[in-house]
Image (cartoon, rainbow, N blue to C red; front, side, top):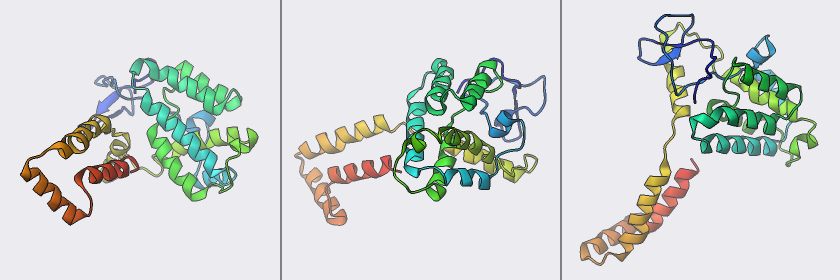
Length: 245
């Protein structure tokens, strides 16, 4: 993600070689193109962070089906928009679509437009919230967030979960900070599987079955004996399982 031009602080390199937000204004602070500052409930309210028990209480009033559909929609939109020039506009559009034009939505748009935050929705937030939804949200069928009456409640959960991303983190503790950084890197990692899947499909489902060499047939027979399925079918099942992981 691209930082907003009015982001309040730069970035500084620490002993692991990773660039983090500078804790204070520094002459050696460096801009980072693929980073942005997310907005938390604590930032928005100007008060205390939203605690996990408070978030869980709100989720229990919401339909898990509604929440998971909304998370899937947000995740897809974030993954599909790869142009840095469009990401800021995407954040505004998602606020309008997901949160609406109520008090919360207007407050979020204001923060995006005045430069105090550049990201409302991010992957870390959605991954963490999806786990809490599965554990705690109500099992009733989809009801469009109580026909709209609970939409701002859902918006508060979306924003509030960002307070939990670094809850109880002691940034001065080397082991805690390292664990946090590794966790964030894993959540931010994207593996582009489409080219790999396309190549494997071409090799295993198109080219391989057409090979007439005896050695190829021997390999196919041996593979089938050990796995109970042909190589092409094994690839298909593996691809399906991988996409669901």
